Image (cartoon, rainbow, N blue to C red; front, side, top):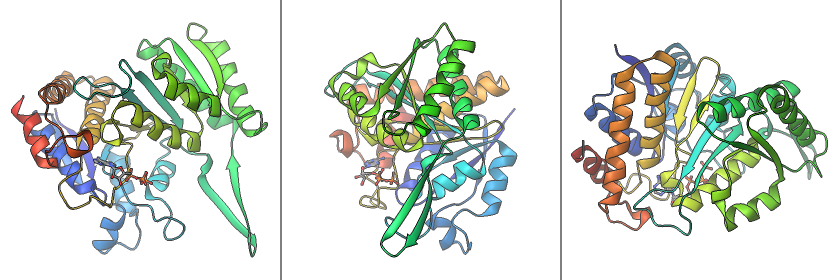
Length: 340
Ligand code: ATP
Protein backbone atom coordinates (compact mmCIF):
# COMPACT_ATOMS: atom_id res chain seq x y z
CA UNK A 1 0.00 0.00 0.00
CA UNK A 2 1.29 3.50 -0.76
CA UNK A 3 -0.29 6.82 0.15
CA UNK A 4 -0.58 9.77 -2.19
CA UNK A 5 0.80 12.85 -0.46
CA UNK A 6 0.94 16.34 -1.91
CA UNK A 7 4.31 18.07 -1.47
CA UNK A 8 4.03 21.85 -1.53
CA UNK A 9 7.60 23.19 -1.35
CA UNK A 10 6.47 26.81 -0.81
CA UNK A 11 9.01 29.62 -1.19
CA UNK A 12 11.96 31.16 0.70
CA UNK A 13 13.68 28.30 2.54
CA UNK A 14 10.61 26.12 1.78
CA UNK A 15 11.96 24.23 -1.25
CA UNK A 16 15.30 23.51 0.47
CA UNK A 17 13.78 22.06 3.63
CA UNK A 18 10.83 20.36 1.89
CA UNK A 19 13.08 18.51 -0.55
CA UNK A 20 15.41 17.50 2.28
CA UNK A 21 12.40 16.03 4.11
CA UNK A 22 11.27 14.17 1.00
CA UNK A 23 14.75 12.71 0.54
CA UNK A 24 14.78 11.53 4.17
CA UNK A 25 11.31 9.96 3.95
CA UNK A 26 12.19 8.19 0.71
CA UNK A 27 15.41 6.86 2.24
CA UNK A 28 13.36 5.60 5.21
CA UNK A 29 11.17 3.65 2.75
CA UNK A 30 8.04 5.53 3.83
CA UNK A 31 5.22 4.15 1.65
CA UNK A 32 4.40 7.45 -0.04
CA UNK A 33 3.69 8.57 -3.58
CA UNK A 34 4.57 12.27 -3.88
CA UNK A 35 2.58 14.69 -5.99
CA UNK A 36 4.26 18.09 -6.18
CA UNK A 37 2.05 21.19 -6.35
CA UNK A 38 2.83 24.84 -5.79
CA UNK A 39 1.73 27.76 -3.65
CA UNK A 40 3.05 31.20 -2.74
CA UNK A 41 5.60 33.09 -4.80
CA UNK A 42 6.65 29.75 -6.32
CA UNK A 43 3.16 29.48 -7.90
CA UNK A 44 3.40 32.99 -9.42
CA UNK A 45 6.83 32.15 -10.80
CA UNK A 46 5.31 29.12 -12.53
CA UNK A 47 2.73 31.26 -14.29
CA UNK A 48 -0.26 30.79 -11.98
CA UNK A 49 -2.34 33.94 -11.45
CA UNK A 50 -3.11 33.10 -7.86
CA UNK A 51 -0.69 32.47 -4.95
CA UNK A 52 -2.93 29.55 -3.99
CA UNK A 53 -3.89 27.86 -7.29
CA UNK A 54 -7.14 25.93 -7.34
CA UNK A 55 -5.32 22.85 -8.67
CA UNK A 56 -3.18 22.80 -5.51
CA UNK A 57 -6.24 23.01 -3.26
CA UNK A 58 -8.04 20.33 -5.31
CA UNK A 59 -5.08 17.96 -5.17
CA UNK A 60 -4.75 18.31 -1.38
CA UNK A 61 -8.48 17.73 -1.00
CA UNK A 62 -8.28 14.62 -3.16
CA UNK A 63 -5.24 13.10 -1.43
CA UNK A 64 -6.34 14.21 2.04
CA UNK A 65 -2.75 14.77 3.20
CA UNK A 66 -0.04 17.30 2.32
CA UNK A 67 3.45 18.22 3.50
CA UNK A 68 3.95 21.93 3.05
CA UNK A 69 6.93 24.26 3.17
CA UNK A 70 6.44 27.86 4.30
CA UNK A 71 5.09 30.58 2.01
CA UNK A 72 6.11 34.23 2.38
CA UNK A 73 3.46 36.71 3.50
CA UNK A 74 4.31 40.31 2.57
CA UNK A 75 4.27 42.73 5.52
CA UNK A 76 1.92 45.74 5.54
CA UNK A 77 0.50 45.23 2.04
CA UNK A 78 0.64 42.90 -0.98
CA UNK A 79 -1.23 39.64 -1.30
CA UNK A 80 -3.03 38.00 1.64
CA UNK A 81 -1.42 35.10 3.49
CA UNK A 82 -1.35 31.86 1.51
CA UNK A 83 -1.13 29.93 4.77
CA UNK A 84 -4.30 31.53 6.14
CA UNK A 85 -6.10 31.03 2.80
CA UNK A 86 -5.17 27.34 2.68
CA UNK A 87 -6.39 26.72 6.23
CA UNK A 88 -9.67 28.48 5.45
CA UNK A 89 -10.32 26.90 2.04
CA UNK A 90 -9.58 23.39 3.28
CA UNK A 91 -11.25 24.03 6.64
CA UNK A 92 -8.15 22.93 8.56
CA UNK A 93 -9.59 24.16 11.81
CA UNK A 94 -7.16 22.73 14.36
CA UNK A 95 -3.42 23.38 14.54
CA UNK A 96 -1.30 21.08 16.71
CA UNK A 97 2.25 22.09 17.57
CA UNK A 98 4.15 19.80 19.93
CA UNK A 99 6.96 21.64 21.72
CA UNK A 100 9.52 19.32 23.31
CA UNK A 101 13.03 19.59 24.69
CA UNK A 102 15.43 17.65 22.50
CA UNK A 103 18.40 15.77 23.89
CA UNK A 104 21.46 17.33 22.30
CA UNK A 105 19.84 20.77 22.02
CA UNK A 106 20.68 22.45 25.32
CA UNK A 107 18.36 25.29 26.33
CA UNK A 108 17.44 27.14 29.50
CA UNK A 109 14.87 24.45 30.43
CA UNK A 110 14.88 20.67 30.45
CA UNK A 111 11.84 18.45 30.19
CA UNK A 112 9.57 20.80 28.25
CA UNK A 113 6.76 18.73 26.75
CA UNK A 114 3.74 20.82 25.88
CA UNK A 115 1.37 21.01 22.93
CA UNK A 116 -0.05 24.21 21.47
CA UNK A 117 -3.56 23.70 20.04
CA UNK A 118 -4.58 26.69 17.96
CA UNK A 119 -7.98 27.53 16.46
CA UNK A 120 -7.07 28.07 12.83
CA UNK A 121 -10.04 29.70 11.10
CA UNK A 122 -11.30 32.70 13.09
CA UNK A 123 -10.16 35.43 15.47
CA UNK A 124 -8.25 38.57 14.49
CA UNK A 125 -5.89 36.40 12.45
CA UNK A 126 -8.62 35.89 9.85
CA UNK A 127 -7.50 39.34 8.67
CA UNK A 128 -10.92 40.89 8.09
CA UNK A 129 -9.94 44.56 7.96
CA UNK A 130 -11.45 47.77 6.64
CA UNK A 131 -10.34 51.32 6.16
CA UNK A 132 -13.49 53.07 7.32
CA UNK A 133 -12.22 56.46 6.36
CA UNK A 134 -8.75 57.86 5.75
CA UNK A 135 -6.65 57.22 8.85
CA UNK A 136 -9.18 54.95 10.55
CA UNK A 137 -9.06 51.18 10.18
CA UNK A 138 -10.91 48.38 11.93
CA UNK A 139 -9.93 44.77 12.31
CA UNK A 140 -12.67 42.29 13.09
CA UNK A 141 -12.21 39.57 15.68
CA UNK A 142 -14.68 36.80 14.89
CA UNK A 143 -15.62 34.06 17.34
CA UNK A 144 -18.44 31.62 16.72
CA UNK A 145 -19.91 29.09 19.10
CA UNK A 146 -19.49 26.45 16.41
CA UNK A 147 -15.74 27.00 15.92
CA UNK A 148 -15.02 27.45 19.64
CA UNK A 149 -16.86 24.22 20.47
CA UNK A 150 -15.17 22.38 17.61
CA UNK A 151 -11.64 23.38 18.70
CA UNK A 152 -12.43 22.54 22.33
CA UNK A 153 -13.53 19.02 21.33
CA UNK A 154 -10.40 18.77 19.22
CA UNK A 155 -8.07 19.75 22.09
CA UNK A 156 -9.72 17.42 24.62
CA UNK A 157 -9.89 14.54 22.11
CA UNK A 158 -6.19 15.06 21.46
CA UNK A 159 -5.46 15.08 25.20
CA UNK A 160 -7.35 11.83 25.75
CA UNK A 161 -5.76 10.10 22.75
CA UNK A 162 -2.22 11.02 23.83
CA UNK A 163 -2.62 10.34 27.53
CA UNK A 164 -2.33 14.03 28.41
CA UNK A 165 -3.70 15.16 31.75
CA UNK A 166 -4.53 18.86 31.47
CA UNK A 167 -5.91 21.38 28.97
CA UNK A 168 -5.30 25.05 29.75
CA UNK A 169 -7.14 27.70 27.74
CA UNK A 170 -5.23 30.97 27.23
CA UNK A 171 -7.51 33.99 26.88
CA UNK A 172 -8.06 37.69 27.47
CA UNK A 173 -11.71 37.44 28.47
CA UNK A 174 -11.30 40.20 31.05
CA UNK A 175 -11.02 42.63 28.13
CA UNK A 176 -12.48 40.67 25.16
CA UNK A 177 -15.48 39.74 27.26
CA UNK A 178 -17.66 38.55 24.40
CA UNK A 179 -15.27 36.85 21.99
CA UNK A 180 -12.80 35.27 24.42
CA UNK A 181 -15.68 34.87 26.86
CA UNK A 182 -17.42 32.68 24.27
CA UNK A 183 -14.26 30.60 23.84
CA UNK A 184 -14.11 30.02 27.60
CA UNK A 185 -17.80 29.15 27.89
CA UNK A 186 -17.64 26.66 25.03
CA UNK A 187 -14.43 25.08 26.36
CA UNK A 188 -15.86 24.64 29.84
CA UNK A 189 -19.11 23.17 28.51
CA UNK A 190 -17.23 20.70 26.34
CA UNK A 191 -14.98 19.77 29.25
CA UNK A 192 -17.75 19.33 31.80
CA UNK A 193 -20.00 17.31 29.51
CA UNK A 194 -17.54 15.11 27.64
CA UNK A 195 -14.06 15.07 29.17
CA UNK A 196 -14.31 15.39 32.98
CA UNK A 197 -11.32 13.05 33.34
CA UNK A 198 -9.01 15.77 31.94
CA UNK A 199 -8.04 18.69 34.20
CA UNK A 200 -9.36 21.96 32.76
CA UNK A 201 -8.06 25.39 33.59
CA UNK A 202 -7.96 28.92 32.21
CA UNK A 203 -5.15 31.46 32.21
CA UNK A 204 -5.10 35.10 31.13
CA UNK A 205 -2.65 35.24 28.27
CA UNK A 206 -0.28 37.90 29.61
CA UNK A 207 0.17 35.98 32.87
CA UNK A 208 0.46 32.79 30.83
CA UNK A 209 3.41 34.28 28.90
CA UNK A 210 5.19 35.12 32.13
CA UNK A 211 4.64 31.63 33.52
CA UNK A 212 5.74 30.02 30.26
CA UNK A 213 9.11 31.75 30.33
CA UNK A 214 9.51 31.09 34.08
CA UNK A 215 8.70 27.38 33.97
CA UNK A 216 7.28 25.84 30.79
CA UNK A 217 7.46 22.33 32.27
CA UNK A 218 4.23 22.87 34.21
CA UNK A 219 2.17 23.13 31.00
CA UNK A 220 0.55 20.23 29.17
CA UNK A 221 -1.95 20.96 26.35
CA UNK A 222 -2.56 24.68 25.87
CA UNK A 223 -5.41 25.82 23.67
CA UNK A 224 -6.20 29.26 22.30
CA UNK A 225 -7.68 31.34 19.49
CA UNK A 226 -5.85 31.96 16.25
CA UNK A 227 -3.70 35.06 16.84
CA UNK A 228 -2.69 34.08 20.36
CA UNK A 229 -1.74 30.68 18.94
CA UNK A 230 0.47 32.26 16.32
CA UNK A 231 2.41 34.31 18.86
CA UNK A 232 2.58 31.68 21.61
CA UNK A 233 3.84 29.05 19.15
CA UNK A 234 6.96 31.11 18.40
CA UNK A 235 7.44 31.91 22.09
CA UNK A 236 7.29 28.20 22.89
CA UNK A 237 9.69 27.41 20.04
CA UNK A 238 12.16 29.75 21.71
CA UNK A 239 11.97 27.65 24.88
CA UNK A 240 13.27 24.49 23.18
CA UNK A 241 15.84 25.76 20.70
CA UNK A 242 14.02 27.97 18.22
CA UNK A 243 11.92 27.81 15.09
CA UNK A 244 14.09 25.12 13.55
CA UNK A 245 12.82 22.43 15.93
CA UNK A 246 9.04 22.82 16.22
CA UNK A 247 6.72 20.89 13.89
CA UNK A 248 3.05 21.38 13.21
CA UNK A 249 -0.11 19.90 11.77
CA UNK A 250 -3.24 21.62 10.48
CA UNK A 251 -6.11 19.20 10.83
CA UNK A 252 -9.58 19.25 9.28
CA UNK A 253 -12.40 16.70 9.06
CA UNK A 254 -11.09 15.07 5.89
CA UNK A 255 -7.84 16.84 5.09
CA UNK A 256 -4.61 17.53 6.97
CA UNK A 257 -1.63 19.68 6.04
CA UNK A 258 1.65 19.22 7.91
CA UNK A 259 4.06 22.14 8.12
CA UNK A 260 6.74 23.62 10.36
CA UNK A 261 5.84 26.50 12.65
CA UNK A 262 8.49 28.72 11.05
CA UNK A 263 8.03 31.03 8.07
CA UNK A 264 9.97 31.35 4.84
CA UNK A 265 13.04 33.00 6.49
CA UNK A 266 14.00 35.11 3.45
CA UNK A 267 17.24 36.20 5.16
CA UNK A 268 18.74 32.73 4.74
CA UNK A 269 16.77 31.46 1.70
CA UNK A 270 18.74 29.87 -1.12
CA UNK A 271 21.93 29.58 0.96
CA UNK A 272 21.51 25.98 2.08
CA UNK A 273 21.66 27.05 5.74
CA UNK A 274 18.09 26.38 6.90
CA UNK A 275 17.41 23.74 9.50
CA UNK A 276 15.16 21.09 7.90
CA UNK A 277 14.37 19.47 11.25
CA UNK A 278 11.03 21.23 11.84
CA UNK A 279 9.57 20.02 8.55
CA UNK A 280 11.16 16.59 9.05
CA UNK A 281 9.45 16.41 12.45
CA UNK A 282 6.22 17.54 10.75
CA UNK A 283 6.62 14.71 8.26
CA UNK A 284 6.94 12.26 11.18
CA UNK A 285 3.62 13.63 12.48
CA UNK A 286 2.22 13.07 8.99
CA UNK A 287 3.37 9.44 8.92
CA UNK A 288 1.87 8.83 12.36
CA UNK A 289 -1.37 10.43 11.18
CA UNK A 290 -1.43 8.10 8.16
CA UNK A 291 -0.72 5.15 10.44
CA UNK A 292 -3.59 6.10 12.76
CA UNK A 293 -6.18 7.05 10.15
CA UNK A 294 -5.40 4.35 7.57
CA UNK A 295 -4.07 1.64 9.86
CA UNK A 296 -0.79 1.28 7.98
CA UNK A 297 1.98 -0.13 10.17
CA UNK A 298 4.62 0.68 7.53
CA UNK A 299 3.97 4.39 8.11
CA UNK A 300 4.46 3.94 11.85
CA UNK A 301 7.69 2.05 11.22
CA UNK A 302 9.04 4.77 8.92
CA UNK A 303 8.02 7.47 11.42
CA UNK A 304 9.94 5.74 14.23
CA UNK A 305 12.93 5.22 11.98
CA UNK A 306 13.15 8.91 11.07
CA UNK A 307 12.57 10.08 14.64
CA UNK A 308 15.20 7.75 16.08
CA UNK A 309 17.69 8.85 13.42
CA UNK A 310 17.29 12.60 13.95
CA UNK A 311 17.44 12.15 17.73
CA UNK A 312 20.68 10.20 17.37
CA UNK A 313 22.10 12.76 14.94
CA UNK A 314 21.45 15.55 17.45
CA UNK A 315 23.00 13.53 20.27
CA UNK A 316 26.07 12.97 18.10
CA UNK A 317 26.42 16.75 17.81
CA UNK A 318 25.12 17.13 14.22
CA UNK A 319 23.56 20.58 14.09
CA UNK A 320 22.69 23.35 11.69
CA UNK A 321 23.79 26.92 12.38
CA UNK A 322 20.59 28.02 14.16
CA UNK A 323 21.46 25.40 16.83
CA UNK A 324 25.08 26.47 17.05
CA UNK A 325 26.46 23.91 14.59
CA UNK A 326 28.10 24.13 11.18
CA UNK A 327 26.01 21.83 8.99
CA UNK A 328 24.00 22.98 5.99
CA UNK A 329 20.49 21.77 5.15
CA UNK A 330 21.57 18.86 2.95
CA UNK A 331 24.45 17.83 5.19
CA UNK A 332 22.13 17.57 8.15
CA UNK A 333 19.70 15.51 6.05
CA UNK A 334 22.63 13.24 5.06
CA UNK A 335 23.52 12.75 8.73
CA UNK A 336 19.94 11.66 9.48
CA UNK A 337 19.93 9.22 6.55
CA UNK A 338 23.34 7.86 7.60
CA UNK A 339 21.77 6.78 10.90
CA UNK A 340 19.00 4.62 9.43
P1 ATP B 1 6.13 34.27 9.12
O1 ATP B 1 5.51 35.62 9.27
O2 ATP B 1 6.04 33.70 7.75
O3 ATP B 1 5.78 33.30 10.22
P2 ATP B 1 8.44 35.17 10.50
O4 ATP B 1 8.63 36.60 10.22
O5 ATP B 1 7.84 34.73 11.79
O6 ATP B 1 7.69 34.47 9.27
P3 ATP B 1 10.35 33.19 10.06
O7 ATP B 1 10.54 33.12 8.61
O8 ATP B 1 9.54 32.12 10.68
O9 ATP B 1 9.85 34.60 10.40
O10 ATP B 1 11.74 33.15 10.79
C1 ATP B 1 12.29 34.18 11.58
C2 ATP B 1 13.80 33.99 11.57
O11 ATP B 1 14.13 32.75 12.22
C3 ATP B 1 14.31 33.81 10.15
O12 ATP B 1 14.56 35.04 9.59
C4 ATP B 1 15.50 32.93 10.32
O13 ATP B 1 16.64 33.69 10.58
C5 ATP B 1 15.14 32.06 11.50
N1 ATP B 1 14.61 30.76 11.06
C6 ATP B 1 13.31 30.42 10.86
N2 ATP B 1 13.20 29.16 10.43
C7 ATP B 1 14.45 28.67 10.37
C8 ATP B 1 15.01 27.40 10.00
N3 ATP B 1 14.24 26.37 9.60
N4 ATP B 1 16.34 27.26 10.04
C9 ATP B 1 17.14 28.26 10.44
N5 ATP B 1 16.69 29.47 10.80
C10 ATP B 1 15.36 29.68 10.77
